[in-house]
Structure formats: structure tokens, C-alpha cells
Image (cartoon, helix red, strand yellow):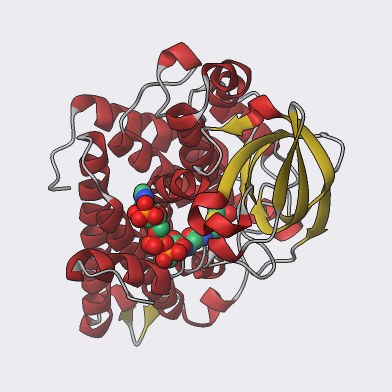
Length: 384
Ligand code: CAA
């Protein structure tokens, strides 16, 4: 790897790699087939500090930088993308948003147990009719004395069922559009928050994705994150960080697919020799390795900008766009190299192929990333 990593970053990467290969990988395929949530593994990850990686120790985190976090997330994704998405949403969008915008009370009550991995955090922005365009959401939060009452429906919520706390966006002032959206902490089992339909997905089958319904869900006013109207910016900043995480997940799955393809190509004989000896296949492997490395450099560069305190919105979108499209190409090629066996559940490559498909969709589709990047490059905000 050409990017200069510090001894500490390399040590974290090596530690997570060992854990991932020993603990996360062995039953990843069974969990995928049976849709088993990796609860025990996530508990261990919490104990090892993987669930509050970028949060300072005073709030039970590890105080690691974004580069270390991205490397760690890639290692988990290498073995199990379902486990990685839970780690990703929890660390970046939930913990970081609470750390940067939450009151001291919310940090003590909510961030500390989250960062210690006592329970998992989820993030509820998307609605049945508001995906790419969060301003179109219709969930409302109305102030009532020292409470807010939330009503509405959220869709495609990662870890909706298995989380202990959800960061929920809702409109506190319809007329103000972007500036009328707020973010609230809703602990699990709050009366009025109901777990709805569980999606039956093509990939990431060991992670749950659910509807969340809010029916006169009353929460204390202190559960507002930041100020009323801060919600859109809190979410966008959380997604900036989250998008580095999706790049990391993409790179982990792509590396696993390449490694599986190389292993298979060195074992498989056709026409009297290992298929790895055919130049046509060697060139495909060369292209796969090059694309993964390019994505890795983009991810590390965006993470380094974040760690230096620079604005990194466009670079996070570039890393997410390139890495998520790259992994779809890589897993397709890895499956092709496996021939008919790649189409069966005897080899992990079909799981990689299915898991990768959502990476160009969640935390902003490729089309949304292109909007963010082109706005940055052209510096002339669309006029609509
Ligand atoms: N950081 C800080 N502020 C930002 C920002 C950012 N990254 N992006 C926008 N803003 C600010 C703007 O500066 C602007 O501020 P002012 O009003 O003060 O000028 C305000 O927010 C509005 O910005 P835009 O006009 O650019 O907003 P828009 O409505 O045109 O939308 C968008 C921009 C980039 C398309 C945005 O809507 C977007 O990212 N959409 C995709 C949503 C998304 O990613 N959803 C994924 C769901 S979550 C998920 O998938 C999690 C999971 O389960 C895995």
C-alpha cells in the first residue's frame, strides 16, 4: 500500500484483521442464509472498542482517527458486509452526530453506552416517499410542554429492529424546508415507536432493515440533538462521514472477492493448466487489483482530509461513488472467474456479489454523489 500509514493505524488494521478472520468470517455464510443478526459478534466488537472508534475516551470511545476507522471497517466488511453496515451506521452517523451536536446530557446518557457498545444505534431519515430528497419527509415532531410528539413512518432503517436507540429526523417547521428539520434521540421501547415490516433483501441478509412507525411517540425535549432546525446539516455531516464508511465497506468486499478469485484461479485446471496461467484471466485480475487500490487511495485521502479538519464532502462522495461502483464490477468479475461454481452457494463470491449491490444505493445513490461532486466542481449551485 503506497499511502503512508502510521504504526498505530497499521496496528489497528492488523488487530481488526485478525479478529475479523477468526471471529466474523467463520459463520458469515450461515448468517446470510438464515438471516441471523450477528448480535454476539457485535457485543465482542463493543468490548474491543470497535463501536466508538472515533469518539474520545472521555465518552468511552477509542479516540482513533478516521483512517484507522476506515481500515478497521474494511477488515470487518472483508468477512461479513452485514456486520460492517451495522458498525458503519453506528460509528459514523449515530455516534459522531451525537458527539459533534448532542448536549452534554445526551453525551452522558446516550453516547457513552453507545460508544462502549452496550447497545447499537440506528439512523432513521428515509421515508416511503422521501429517499434521495430528505426535505420531502413528512414525519413531524410537535413541541408539547417539555416533550416532543413524533408522528410518521420511516423506511429501510438499518438495524431498525436490533438497535437500542434511534436517531430520528422529523419536521419541526414545514415552511422552513431544510431549516425546519430536526433530529431526535428515540430510545428503544419508547411507547409509540413501533417496529414495522422487516425487508426480505437480496444482500446484507444478516443485518435487519425495517420500517419504523411513530404513533404519538412522546420523547423528552432534552432528546433534541442540537437546536430545532439543525437536522438537515447534522444529517448531511453524518452522511459525509458515513460515505467514507461505505467506501470502506466496498473496498473490504472487493478485496475479499479478488482474494477468492485468485485462490480459485490457482486451483482450477482447464485445458491442461491452472486457469491463472491464461493471460486473458491475468489481465482481468490486474485490472481488479488496480481498481481496488485506486478506491483505497481515494478513501484514505478523504479520511485524511477529515482528520485534518478540512471540508471533505466532495472527496467523501468521490470515494463512495468510485468504490461502490468498483465493487460491483469486481464482484461480477470474481464470480465470472469462478464459472458455474460462482453461481452456487458453495463459494462466498455469490454473497459478495449480492451484498455489494446496495453500496451504490444507500447513504446516497451514485446519482446523488454525482450531484454533490458536480456542485463542488462547478461551484454554481443548481438554480431550481
Ligand atoms: N455539510 C454541511 N452542510 C451541508 C452539506 C454538507 N455535506 N450538504 C448540504 N449542506 C447545507 C447547504 O450548505 C445548504 O445550507 P444553506 O441552506 O445554509 O445554504 C443546505 O444544507 C441545503 O443544501 P442543498 O441545497 O444542497 O440541499 P438539497 O435539498 O439540494 O440536497 C443533497 C442536497 C446532496 C441531494 C442531499 O439531499 C442528499 O445527500 N440526499 C441523499 C440523502 C441520503 O443520502 N439518504 C441516505 C439515507 S441514510 C442511509 O442509507 C443509511 C443506511 O441505512 C445505511
